[in-house]
Structures are given as structure tokens and as C-alpha cells.
Length: 81
Image (cartoon, rainbow, N blue to C red; front, side):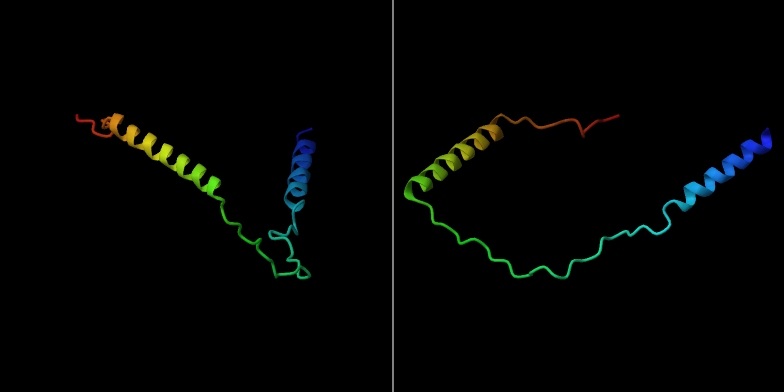
């Protein structure tokens, strides 16, 4: 019985090792695609859009200034023995 188990394990090991013999690591390159891409044309912002951007930027800067004022120095890294 022990011979059959060893024979089965050897066959299973050989089957596992030979299952992935010729796998390609990199897929083949496609050479028939066009390499010329056209970027979309940029659009200019309207005055209303610019005002929205300015408002959001001012709100962000105000929030960052308040966060810097309320931020306390961290003492986690300064542990003394």
C-alpha cells in the first residue's frame, strides 16, 4: 500500500511541475494599431467658471490655514527611555 501512495505522489508531483511548461510572461505586441493619437482641444473657462474655481480655492486655503492653527505638535516619535 505504501508503494502505491508513493507512486501516486510522484505522478502528482510530475503532473504539477509540467503543467506550466511554456507560459508566456508578456503578451505579444500588437503591431497593427495606429500610434497617432489626437488630444482633445482645450476649452477656455467662462467668467462664471473662473469665479467658481476662485471660490473653491479660497475655501480650501482658508480650511488649510485653520487646520495649521489648530494642529498640535506630535510627540509619538519622541519617546524617551
